[in-house]
Image (cartoon, rainbow, N blue to C red; front, side, top):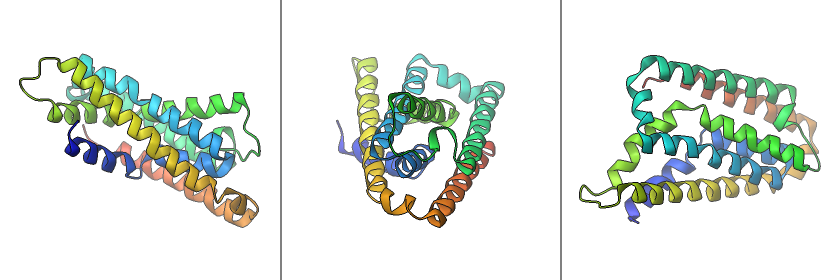
Length: 203
């Protein structure tokens, strides 16, 4: 495993995006256990994109304007829905003192959907992974699985760290209604801005 791949992956994973924002929101509204569930859901959402890149389906997204647009607008709609939920304090981002197995499942599913509906992730894997595979590599598929698995592991660990840091100040945040209201509006604006960025993105 090259250091260049690990460093590049860390920069990509740690950069603020939809998954990071969702994990932080889950941590602040529901606690550390929810942040782990959110991190797991977001990491799980990488799997379809990884498979798509391996099977060449990501190339279809890259070349087909219709396929890319269809997935992109589904992602935009879902991010706007997440923005609305954050404002209303409902769904997976509702403030809850004790997260149950059922609500944990909802947090995971939401994180999964956030990532699976991002077409840029498939194209990222299509363009990113081949750069770290030697032209004379005998087992290309195995190498792609190794790189993808490492990327996913880094995603989960980094997101959990983000979540735990946010959860550590949760008690002080939720005890102040004014701060919580400001955070809800901030998360809502964040999801809306990410949705807008996706809406104007090109293949």
